[in-house]
Every structure is written in C-alpha cells, then in structure tokens.
Image: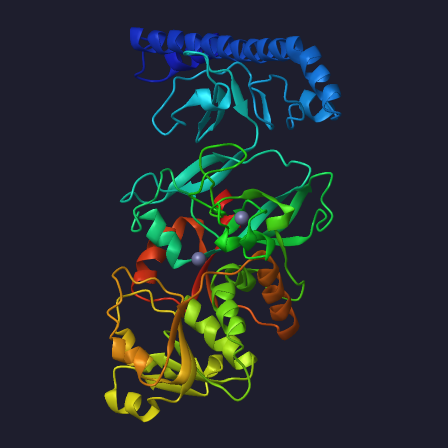
Length: 483
Ligand SMILES: [Zn+2]
Ligand SMILES: [Zn+2]
C-alpha cells in the first residue's frame, strides 16, 4: 500500500487526497468482507454435513431394512433409503431447506401422509416446516396456463421400482394433441403441464425384476404409462381402452407419486417395463420417436381392417398422421391414394408412396373416384365435410376417423345407406400392437419424416404446426434442454 501511495504522490499534478484514502479503506473492507463470506460459506457446508452426519444411522438403518446399498445415499449421489415412513420411495434427506407451500403444490398433503408434491420436488408437510426434497429433480419444459408460453421447470420422477425402467430421453416428437392439451382446448388440462408422448431414449437404470431391458438399450414410451392390467381390454392387450381408465403419459393422475404425470418434454422418464417398448437398432432414433403416436395411430386401423394387396385405400390429409398412413398403406401393398387440399403436396405424396393424389376440393377429380374405395383413413383434425369422403366408398367400404375435429360431424344418413357403408374410429394402439408396429418398421426401415428442433423452439413449432408448416413432424432434440 505504501508503494502505491509513493507512486501516487510522485505523479505530476496528482495529490494523495481524501478521495483516494476512502478508496483504499473501501478496498480493505471489501477484502475483509470477502474473507468473512468465504469462511461463512465453509462453515455452512460443514454445518450441513454435521446435519447429514447426524442422520447417518437413520439412513443406514433404512437402507439395511430395505436391503439397499447405503453408499450412494451417504455420498449424496442418490437416495436409496426411504428413511421416514411418511415419504414415498425416492425421497431423500434435504440439507435443511424449507419453504412455504405455494400455488401449484399438491392441494391435499393429508392424502399422501403429509407429502406435498411441488414442481421443485417432494416436501414433507407439517404445518409450515418442509424439510425433505427429492434428489431426482428432472429438467423439463412446461406451460403453467392455457395462454402461457413454455418455460423451464423442474419435475419429479420416481426412483425406479423393481419393474421400472429409467430412460434418459434423447428425442420427443411433437404431436398435435400436445398443443390441444397445453392450451386446454379439450377442457381437461391441469397445470403445470409437461406434454410429450413420442418418447425415445437410452435406458439409464433398471429395477431388479426388469428382464426386457438393460442399461444402454434404446427404449421408447408412447401415449400410455400404465393401466389397470386386469379389465377385459387390458387382458386383450388394448390398454388404450382400459375400462378403468389408462394412465396417459401426461396430464393424467400419477399412480405412484400422486399429482400429475409429466410427458416427454423432459430429460428423463421412469416407466414400468410393461409400458416401455423396444426400438429396433437399425431405425434412426429421431425419426422413430413419432412412431409412438403418429405411427401406431395409423398402423392400428390399417391392420384392424386388413388393408393390403388388391384394395384401393385412401388417406385423407398429409400431416403427421397422414404421411405415416401413406407409408404404411403403401408398405402393406394397397393401391394408395392421398386426398389433400394442397396441390403443393402432390409430389411429396407420391414420394412417400401414394400411387395417386386427389385434390379434394376439385369436384371433378372427386367425382371420378366416387364409390371406388375399400377403405379410407381420415386423419384430419380440423372441421371438414365427412360426406364427401363417404361418397368415395364402395359397398361395405369403411371410413375410419383418427383425427378429432372440434365440432360434431355433420353426417347425412344417405351417406351411409346407399350403398351400405361403415364409419368407425380408432385410437392409438395397445402395447403388444405398438411393439409389433415398431418391429415391422425395423424390418421395413420405416421412420417418420421429421424436422429437428431445440426445446427452446417449441412455442414457434406450435405456431408453425397450426399453419401445417412442417414436413411432417417436429422432433425435439432433448440435448438442447441442457443448454
Ligand atoms: Zn399424439
Ligand atoms: Zn384395464
């Protein structure tokens, strides 16, 4: 310091004034403050460790009781022991943090023995004191209302049970249902909402009884994560029609943690192996992810109505679903015809496998094909005239709806009567059929045509999806979530 003073006073025209002295004092104070801060932080860490040390016997006992290795728990890496009886599996000791209950927390802690489910983890609730959090905080993107943009959130995934598979998500397709539910267009959304049911990733951990998967495998999860498994639908492998209500991948009641299920716009997911699918190694993983909804939604009705050689089959609409409908119908050997309103899609329709393309608002083209179709798959989810397509069917022809227009269909009875025709609907597929579809795609090297996006581009992707400005599915590269 004296060195500095000498240099200052020696400088021509410069005097060591009160201003410089004040600066010097401020510098010393800052240094002292810094030292106190660092020692304070060290003391806090030490105090935390002492708190943890005091909990060690409880932890070890809890681990031994549950025949778990206590080491990761003690090192603070992961929780193995469920030390307090009120806590569900996967909840570990938090280092003394507390917070008040907040909006968005689970409304009724008494239902789960005093455990509050919040976006930032699980909290033991005893009046105002909250003292446990979950170590498996998982990064995700969520909307918090029907008009809010997407933002980063932390969600809770359970510790894998004996039959669970923990998956690090690599890709998640963006389905039109995601948009409907994020914006509460079907009136049943609960917030915060993390959409995404076209999930593909790498197995990061498996429970002790898991036989289908090992760490490192590529695995997938579609629209369902659980069902009752005992009703007649479940017994026939049609879990999507579970009579007791299937657990959907997001915005459904979580049978394990309570609260809501959260979808694939996140870095990881934990799902029972019975609801986890194997993905053939030869398929491009990003292109394969939308098979989990767009793929099975079109594959299932084409199989159910035995579409194949010698049949004339129409696919209405060339979007996420329609482009897969064209690929499957062509692969099954049917004479495949695409109906579209956009002349710009003619070439693409043929590239994807259509033998013919009909511009559906050209009356002359429509009339030429009237009464000639065995089967039509209608993938359009906007309001449209169903009678125009019923007129395309021949005797005993069937039209199957897989899109969900917002308003009731205006169906003329004469569309059904002459000649006799059938109208039906179809919803995704059960677990056995979804696996069959993935295996079929593996053998025939079928994936979706996709456009990769970053998680941060999801709002923009929704707007483009509304304008049908996507060929033909957005897929989120989940590595972007870590940016
Ligand atoms: Zn979907
Ligand atoms: Zn069931």
